[in-house]
Amino acid sequence: MEHDHKEHLVRDKQAILDRLKKIEGQVRGLQRMIDEDRYCVDVLVQVAAARAALNKVGLALFEGHARGCMVAAAKRGESDAAVAELMEVLEQFVK
Image 1 (cartoon, rainbow, N blue to C red):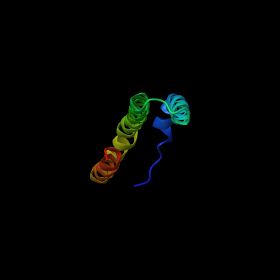
Image 2: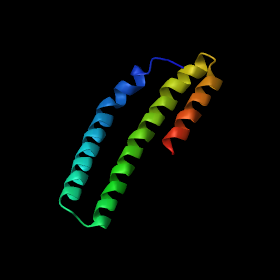
Image 3: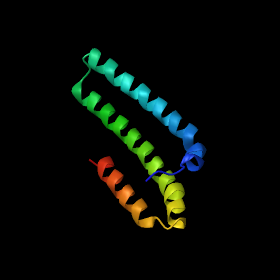
Image 4: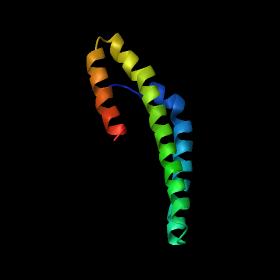
């Protein structure tokens, strides 16, 4: 289901980009830790932190989608398709 999502994404775009840049730094730090043969537990803790940060980005995108795209779909009478699409992507997100 295609729709114009720019309206809600533009509001949050800079915050999402800032979070992704931070995550990029975390991943570079992980690479450095592996290169430096750092203690496994320390690396695993940082992997968990990076995963949590990515999950926050995903949740922010889900919220924007729900508040923008899904509300617009409901107004167009496309609620069932919007919910089906959301459930499909949510299933992929939680894997």
